[in-house]
Amino acid sequence: MHKPSGTWTTILDPMDQGGPYMLTARQGSENVTLRDICFGDVWLCSGQSNMVMTVLQITNASRELAAAAHYPYVRVFAAAPSRSDVELDDLEHIDLPWSIPTAENLGHGNFTYFSAVCWLLGRYLYEALRYPVGLVEVAWGGTPIEAWSSPRALQACTPSTRAECSKPCEGHPLPLRRGISNISPHQHFSGPQTPSVLWNAMIHPLLNMTLRGIAWYQGEANAFLHTDQYNCTFPALIADWRQAFHAGSAGQTELLLPFGFVQLSTYRQQSPQNSFARLRWHQTADVGVVPNARMPRTFMAVAMDLCDEHSPYGSIHPQDKQNVAHRLQLGARAVAYGEKNLVFQGPFPTRAVLEVTRALLNITYSQQLVWHRRDMPAFEVCCSSPVSLCRWLPAPMVAVGSHTVTLALGGCGTLVLALRYAWAEWPCEYQSCALYNTQGLPAPPFLLETLRSSSRAGEMELLRLRPSSLLAWGI
Image (cartoon, rainbow, N blue to C red; front, top):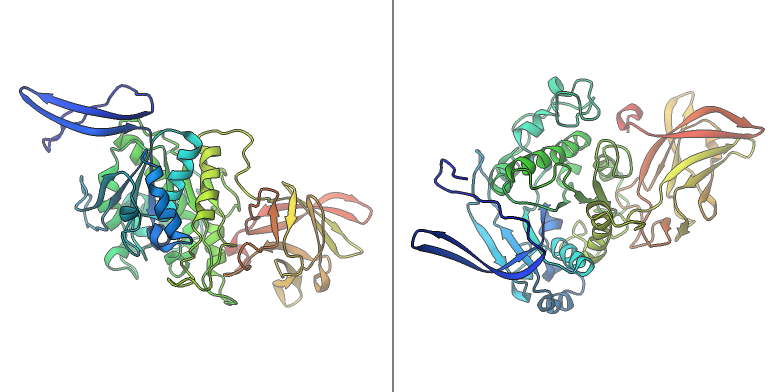
């Protein structure tokens, strides 16, 4: 297929995974030959500085770099940071052309290339799939989601188009959300933070690639700016990128392209701010778990228990990227590759029963529980009082069963309006949050309304749990 720019494209017949091959293009007497070609799956990795952190910067870096030589069928490519006010058809600069991994190109320097999360995800996938995996890094530290969003995606989160949509609307391809203020084209942003400049320069040039999935590690910037718009801007970006890569690849990238992401880790201990907690919640479109109706074919690596107070790169840059990538690849194998019976997310509440006279709340979880810390203030309840609609009080764990947690409501009595878990910037110490499953995956944070039901037997009252709107509770 010829293009007005003078370039051309062709689509090869499907090939079996493997390699290396030679690929030759001929026109008349002229030949161009590409050597050492592999056929396999390509994953794109994007986001900000925690995605940019290289293998040189992580825990056990020397061992990880030395292992690079054992994976010649995992190929790596890194675009150079670049921004543009208009959509580009090609990358302006490349940091690392398609390469076989070496210690040098995986650990080129701090916050350069190659992404540790991306590399480890690809390596773990290769170990599971046993065929070539290509990794494309397009990331830039300190950048908000607005910079990676197309104008079309940002338009989905303005009041005029948001209207009454809380999921993909008929006649409008993007998931929309009510109750969020307008995103001004340049409000509070400059340089690489400016809306759409990274979409223009780093994503748009890659749209003709055939992708198997996307890995995204971003959100720290939005924990400080436009936090409560993220429950719209993130689902909108996912939907828009999917459509764009599907169209740009002539339909070879599937329309519901698997999209994995890392839920924010930690930043400051004992911080009174809750913007990280709110951002984590918004990363799930205010549902708590993915996939969900607003975010189909997505998967999430919970990272709030992978804190790193003594990281030489600052506590906002934890060095344990192995567990991050491990949790991501579980989701990729389950969601992107359809691996059956693979547990890829932690336990989540399914019901609650209120013991009225004893002022206890029994929460049932979806999976068998392993509790690491029963003495930590992990749960809080929102209590109704004459002076406040919602007053958050600690709800200590008094018992943990195989699938249940019992909370003491204390001063709240039975006027429980909502329940939240791990709602803090730094909710626990390293791998020591309160609840995990038997596979070692942490229970994700949540914010749930407790709705009274008509089901009551004696002193036991069943409460319905529903994802809560932050705005409704003024949190």
